[in-house]
Length: 318
Image 1 (cartoon, rainbow, N blue to C red):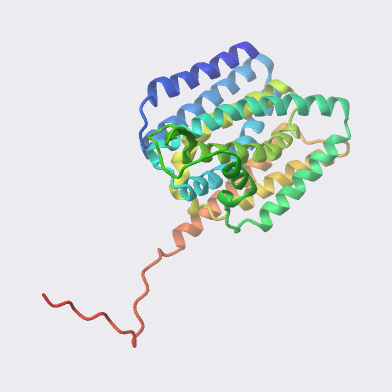
Image 2 (cartoon, helix red, strand yellow):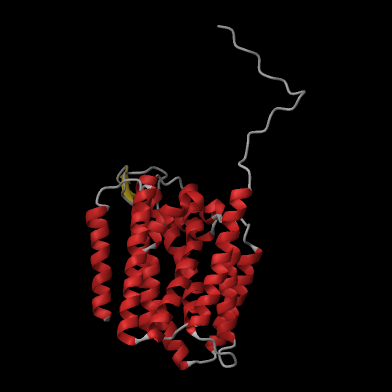
């Protein structure tokens, strides 16, 4: 199953980039919705196969892990929107940046998953460390839920600009260009570095979170990969409406605190995968519904009328 799953992943990636997105184009809302439906359907089909082949235990663990990874990946979208906006990446090339960023994320996450499983099998006490880390991360996310992100001004981008010769000019969809005989990085490469770095940081939260559900490396790996594969289409589906999900980060912080507490109390409290799935679905669903209700009752911003004593510009004579 390992070989079959990895072959399936590479086949889908080749089909994605080599056929459907061979030419750079702006991803429409309709196209993003169709691809999101495809990735979710594939994940649920894979879940059904696990359920049928190995029983309800692994099937429920995969579904819970997939929901955790899918929900936490939404937080990536907030950062991706800021990165593309700050570096002025045209919509035409955003899919290319996300494709290569997520491709490298597959390799990095696989290494982190296997390392995490090996460490937990050898050092059981690390599960308490992971649990405490997730609780603190959840509390921090709640406190900073309204803080503005500025990854383009972070230490990674400052270091990259000092080390890697770059240019603010685009050269089509190329990550590198040549100016005056020098090979320079375009803003696409800088965006790719930020996307990869942000994914590694989010993986530090999401991978320990799924260890609260299962230690099976195959289930951890497959649920992670399915969530990442659907991240690009989810970005183009939600990027224009992120401001409507006011309470989503509150829900995500609740998920992190819950799974962190579950890990920290693993030797005291035993929750079935079904209970964990129900709690996570309830927390996320409540935050989404509350966000949509608030967005519906929030009046749109209207341009302010000039003050009564404000001087109006005089008409220009022909």
